[in-house]
Image 1 (cartoon, chains in turn purple, cyan):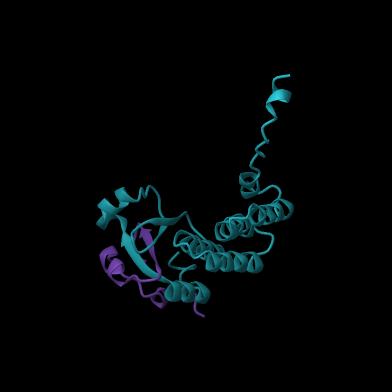
Image 2: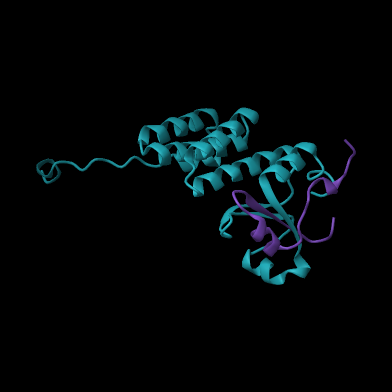
Length: 36
Length: 161
């Protein structure tokens, strides 16, 4: 495994989109200060 | 988080399989920063489908720590949804995967809660909390489990004697 591959996680950039997709799962919201 | 924790294969798998992941830049979402009281980053909130706050994680987490905390969060989500058996299973897994850690102590605390909510039997709560107090006596979670016993009221004639 390389040291960094942030694309492994299919991040969304909208809470509204997450709420539309959520069913049985929890929404994980990462508040970040800078794009990573 | 983006350079060490999220690229970890176990973290990526857990988040991808068990959560709907959202990354928000604080400068672009001031209304949500205000709503969720985000005064510091990194800052993670776990929400259920109704937008209810299930877990809040502030600061940086190493992969193992985040895995444990997210697993506890999943258990608390099950607890909130009244899936007590599933919740207990998740907390038990944290205890087994991270023995003798603060995460295991937290999981034992919530394991007692899950067992009690399922059975309504105080013994189920006390069994796990006594285990917590024995295995992690100095943990803040053990402190939270040391609820003073409620004394049975004395018969009136003795109390008034």
